Length: 487
Image 1 (cartoon, rainbow, N blue to C red):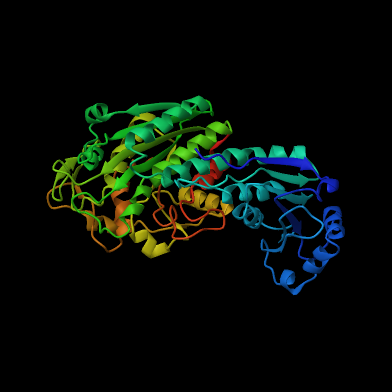
Image 2 (image 1 turned 45 degrees about the vertical axis):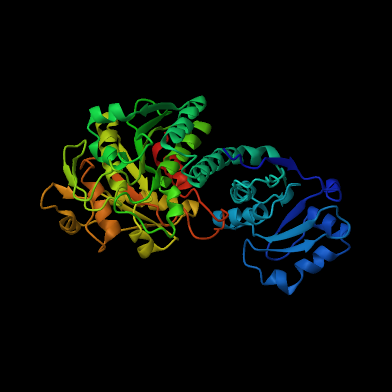
């Protein structure tokens, strides 16, 4: 997997500034007050730093924005980046400030002068997230060089930053999975990558097609029956919380979605490598929990399938029986993710009796129409639980918005021939998808469905990620577990 850039915290050494190569980033408050590091840099640059801080360009900067001096005289560094960040900045601003450095980080690395800023560990975390690189170019681009963050108390800062290192690795694991092309990330390969996390202390179990047939997962198996790649369910368990019932995380893992017989238009279909984004988030969260030795019981389950058109593929009009026993009329084979989730949700409840359950999926284009690429959609059967997830998302700067799920929407997915049909058409498309899933959740289980179709792979870069997958949800769910599920 892609490793986060190496970051070290060291005590401030103003004598090392002149010969430092790569980039130097200096954090300055909005008043432009210069500490010892800044005064040293100003002397080395013969007043250039003071002129920059006193300029109109610096004054007009918003929090977590920067100006830059290229190849400054008196320094070996190729650039001196001056970042405006007050001591009372919020978490999101501190991470964005670090991301300014991560975005332009080169092979010679960077020196970040954070002084005694109280959010220096968040600055480092934002830098790590934005420095992510992934590609398959035949000529490999140089990897970002190491980063040194000079602070007043490096030991204390490093201790505060340690959980963020685990979180960055979880986010990167998710981004890598979503980035991988479908000819690489087959269902077999995906399962193998998850099995390898046993080295971290996770218990990992792979359920193959024969076992899924015995369990009655006909809804899930129907989605993958047109593919050469075998369908699987992978179960990951982290037992760090004693004897209490686990939180269950369930992810949709469609490694490629052609739409099946209800085939998608060709334009943009290449992005359907991301249709396993929900499973990617669950996997990244489980990796994070194992790396930071979380004091919670969490089980992650992902349904891995490929939705392909073939002589054996599922047809519109087919009727399948779910593990729960409900019959489902397949109106559109491109509404396949809910079929996968239906069986895995039921299995999670039957086997683990979770105290609460969350599923994540790139489920509907309709949620993008409703919320764009700024927010994931939250649907659930327990307002308090949905509110906790929304609160965790806000705390981590990841957009999430509660959506309605009244019983009236159930009428749109009634079937003439079966217990339920898998789509109600275009009206309220994301809501009827959630209503379908709710049928496979027991009333006593607090549950939230998170539709991440708009936030998993936005059309451009974000504050903390280059163009490509964001890893949305890993930070939110880790925060939720830390705040609500760890003893």
